[in-house]
Amino acid sequence: MNGEPTGRELVIEEIEELRARVAPDLFTGFDPSTWPTTSMPAFALAAHAYERDDGCGERVSLALRSALFEKGRDISDSQILAAIAAEEGIDLPDLADDSSARRDWAASKERGVQGSPHYFVGDDDYFCPSFDIERVDDELRINPDPEGFQEFVDRVLR
Image (cartoon, rainbow, N blue to C red):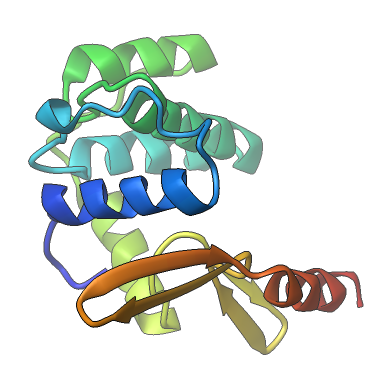
């Protein structure tokens, strides 16, 4: 969200903390050596899928997440992206055309998105409502936040 790629070292730190404190069964296939230098081709594919419909966009987004964090694949690789597109039955867009991904990013910045996941419900917004995330003495700490998640669910169901 800050206009720069997320650094591999920060992602490694976040994954280690999530696995240690929250979800030891997730991120099991993450491979730091396949961390992409850019996510723009993946964002282009996701934007293309959302142009079809929200369900398609969500499935492609989840497939991209799984490919990167569970299967250790480089989601900037056109062959990986072509396979994800084919699984969803859509054509691979022009991955060099990042205009739709940049439009989405600009709209997210304007709306105040802090990262993923960030939810908007009416006039309220919730960044990562199921976790309490803080940095203490330069150490990242991620803990479950059941109260924050319940507040979010209650607001959604209102």
